[in-house]
Amino acid sequence: MEMRSVPGQLPGIKPHSDGRRYFNPEAPQARGFSDLLRWQLERRPEPSPAWVDDVTPSVPPARAEAGRLHATFINHATVLLQGPGWNLLTDPIWSERASPVPRLGPRRHRMPGVRQNDLPPIDIVLISHNHYDHLDWPTVRWLTERDRPHWVVPAGVGRWMRKRNLAPVSELEWGEGLAGSELRIFSVPAAHFSARGLRDRNRTLWCGYVIQTAAGIIYFAGDTGFGPHFAWIREQFGAPRLALLPIGAYAPRWFMSPVHIAPEDALQAHEILGAETSLAIHHGTFRLTDEALDTPRQRLGELASNRSFYAPAHGQCLEIELI
Image 1 (cartoon, rainbow, N blue to C red):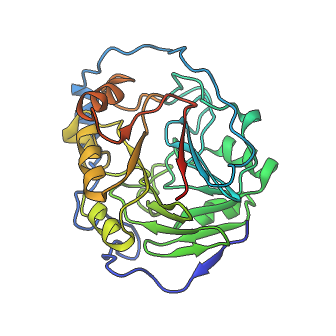
Image 2 (cartoon, rainbow, N blue to C red; image 1 turned 90 degrees about the horizontal axis):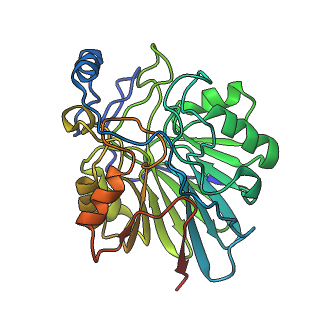
Image 3 (tube, one colour; image 1 turned 180 degrees about the vertical axis):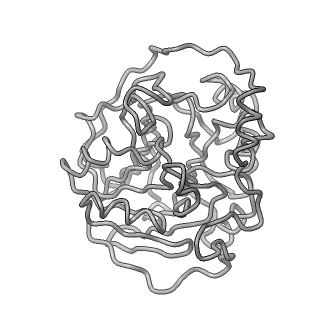
């Protein structure tokens, strides 16, 4: 799908770089190495199963029918969004491990909700930041070879993409956007950090995305701690028709709160955004922190009864009528 740059930048973007590294304005920074050591020495992870065999993969349509928007939760932060004339993926990962090393690092505890061979043609892929559970090279390579989608990435990540001969790639700073015939995409602030190695911490940006569609706006938060950016997004774009909000990888709070929201925070973000519907992401696939695999979903269920915030099963599709 052909996309062109939107001139200018949205107002109200706070300075978030010192010229060498990025940082979170008006929000705490990610914890450092000494805190990481303290967490590893003190951690008391909840018991959690090594494998959960409860996924029945679904087969999405090749395209959404006229008048419908489909949002299929595949796994982790990977959601297939389908609207009239476009198929879009967020932070795709089908690998067994979220790691640079095939046999080390966080491993998968559930199969994806859509098999790779059942994935429809992809036009656009949004990457929120460069962590291995969000920018997965085997999946990126496979999608490029099969579909040659348009990659939308945060500032600094384009260099990684170009070194691997990936194209087309659009690299966005917070507040910058792209426009196509059916939708517009804007990079929006998040509270997180970046790194793929020991020496590149915060050398590239992290972000969320707002997608303007015929159905209204869709907000994909990526990974984020809590902060004033939720209110800013509401002010700039209005209430989302659909928000994709992370609920997992939050324990212990003293260590994780600067970069990951808990279910309680996600509900507060849902209310600040005024989202008509929210869909929970970043849970139930890779165990990255101390809470058990399904604790985030269970906690959200306890808190969000009779609210429009859902934690779908892997492979489950939410359909929205375009009105």
